[in-house]
Length: 149
Ligand code: FES
Image 1 (cartoon, protein in one colour):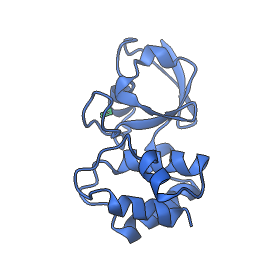
Image 2 (tube, protein in one colour; image 1 turned 90 degrees about the vertical axis):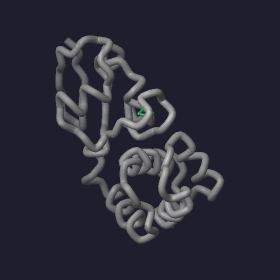
Image 3 (cartoon, protein in one colour; image 1 turned 120 degrees about the vertical axis):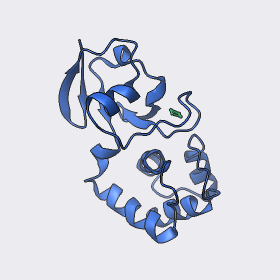
Image 4 (spheres, protein in one colour; image 1 turned 120 degrees about the horizontal axis):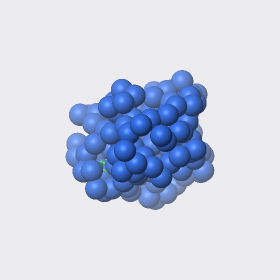
């Protein structure tokens, strides 16, 4: 039995230790904001925070997070920072198909938490682990730039 904190709630799961965190949060806890893109740690669609660090949940076996603190996109939706990012992504036209957006917003939140006023180069670096097939990234960079103001 693996016990951890998920979006502030202490939970336990009897999923096998090799089960991916991505699958456990989506299938066992119905937190479907976290997406699967590549399944190989390349696209960032599955981004979550583990102990406040941005991580790809597709690469994390559930057995390795016993006692850890996991936060998904649903876990930050009530935060002031999320509301600002939500408004700025809308204003900048940063959302097209939307599939990458939960991961992008998690990466944006991680970046702005560490660096509240990033340069454009720092923004691009901050989202470099997240792939978007629609926007060419420029509107997403604009959104983060707006959120930083
Ligand atoms: Fe995890 Fe792509 S699904 S990085």
